[in-house]
Length: 293
Image (cartoon, rainbow, N blue to C red):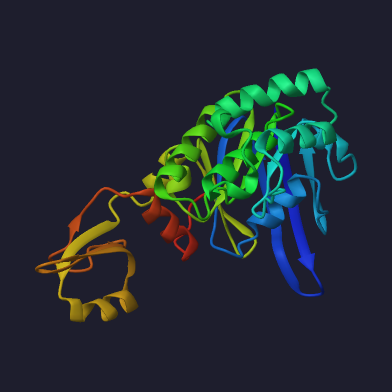
């Protein structure tokens, strides 16, 4: 099972390039697609879901060009878009039954599948409640359930934790990790912690270009020995931010604990600390870059 993206570009209007010559190979597991807002992540996912067409390049699912044959990927696709909406007057059960009918599932198989999915996303007890009364996290769980109705081999989720509280975010991340197994899961987000615990591979986009494609371990290795912490006076913080790549600050009674990504110690007081994916991500999108693995 393999998804091959080759030299993919997408232009809107005459001059706005959302994607630029992107090449990437995706295999079973969780691919964390990271990048700031406007990086081109949603554009890429719409192309992979056969909703949008690229200006240039190809996408192949197990060797078949999905641009020319979109049904090839639609048959195996589960998709949760960023702007997933529901019919507020339908119950969770009714909504999933409606979508199952659209996907061509028989009534008997749909009923059993929906029962399994509601249990998987922990919504069995509220399946008869109208969706209009659901919290944001509960609606997102309905969203992942509808994306799994046809037991997809390719599962694409776009910014799935936006607006969720911390507990719901953790639950959602754990669910995606459990779903990976023998399928491809592409999780698009600008929140590094969303992919830190689940992604087997990371791809970082910025301004439509692929900056990094590596395992989390390889990305961390790039900044090993290049992350520093020290205590500085609050008044010095603006100047430090002007000069160094600051990845974190914590206010303390004796000043501000500052975390910086730099090739060498910023000051004699700075001590080397273990890197995080947040450090590696910030270094990559600000121009430090990583070698494609």
